[in-house]
Structure formats: C-alpha cells, structure tokens
Image (tube, rainbow, N blue to C red; front, top):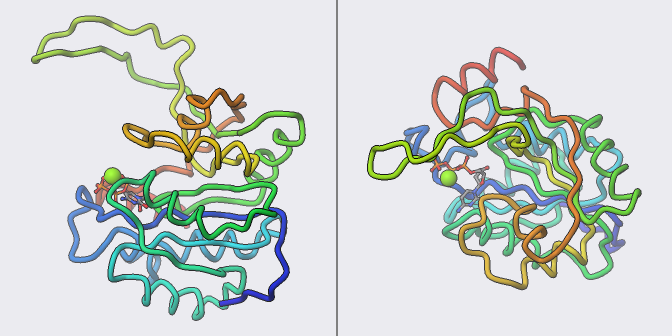
Length: 228
Ligand code: CTP
Ligand code: MG
C-alpha cells in the first residue's frame, strides 16, 4: 500500500464488498477467477495505472480485507491507500470507503469491481464533464428491450423507453456533491448518481461501453473473460 502523505485531487472508490449471490461460487464475487486472477485485480490494476487517478480506496467483503490488501500489494497497485470493510448494501460500502477519502480531494470516481473492463478513455471522458460544471457524470447505454411495469404477475403499464437508459460505472463526482449526497438517506440507492440526483445535483451522461458489463452470472464471467 502507498500512502506517501501527499493528497491527490482525484480519488477512486472501488465497491467490491458484495457477496455475489447470483454468481453462486464459494467466495465473494470480487475474488472469482477471471483470466487466472481475482476479478478485483482487473479494475485495481487498470485504475492504478490510470494517470488521472491519484489514490484508490477499496470496500472489501467482510473477512476479505486482508486478501484485498495482499492483492493490491501483489499487483504493486501503490495508489491503493486504504481497504475498508464494506456494508450490507452497496451504498453503505461506498459510504465506508468515502470516509477514507480526505477532505482535500476534489473528485471521486466510484467503480464496481464487478465491471472489470474499465479503461482510461472512459475515466477521461467522465472527468472532462466535471470540468464543464456538472456535479456528476455517468456512462449510460440505451435500453434494448421493451420495459413493462408488473404488479402481482400482471402488466400494469408499458413504459416509454424513449428517454430511458441503463447506468454503468465508473461514475465521477465532485467530491463535495458526493459527500452531500451520502450525508442523506441511503435506502434504495442502487448507484451513487441516484443519491446525487436526489440531493439536487446535476448529473451528465456519456456514452456507455457494452464491455463495462457488470458480471452477475457465470455466463457474464465467461463473456468478460473472452473479451480480456
Ligand atoms: N457491492 C458492495 N457492497 C455491497 C453490495 C455490492 O460493495 N453490500 C458492490 C459489489 O461488490 C459489486 C457492485 O457493488 O462490485 C455491484 O453489485 P452487484 O453486482 O449486485 O454485486 P453483488 O451484490 O455481490 O452480487 P449479488 O447481487 O448477485 O449478490
Ligand atoms: Mg447485489
């Protein structure tokens, strides 16, 4: 682990604390094997090598803090300055990691370990939008399927998908806006942008990347592995 004492402007938070229920293996999803190393290694490696990022905090699954630190050391990911224990929900894991980000940080990029194929170009595009006056920037993809609202097994509405998109990570935020958002109620938040929006922040979008697929099932893992 690094920790030179000098605080950089741009921090990354990696949410890796989920159990991976739907993947269904004997360990947390962040430690599922991808290309011969833990899934978490891919994002850590990529974010550590990204010149736009100064420091990284990892939210690890309970009891997997030590393996997470060892992984960062093995990767020589020297920007990883802290590894905290995640919470019951994603937002709580991010909150725990955010508590390790110093007041002086200007920008926080929050990323899911479950999306291993993060790249510099995406980080660059997101940070550029923050420079244009937005509180947050998120990658989004158009929704392909027809969307329906269902109650008790019956369709009550077909939703107009014209202006609907699917949000990915990484998501970039001005640090004060993200902190304000996390000072409020975290219930029901499945991404960070929703909290910033709820707090009145302006969140812009960039074109998402299909390769930023979130690994959820074994089939997803195989697909991402084929893209490595
Ligand atoms: N996450 C987290 N803390 C939690 C839950 C999720 O840090 N309490 C992270 C996961 O590690 C993942 C990301 O948030 O990188 C997206 O969550 P998801 O894909 O749902 O992962 P899991 O919750 O682990 O998977 P599942 O829902 O199948 O259990
Ligand atoms: Mg989950």
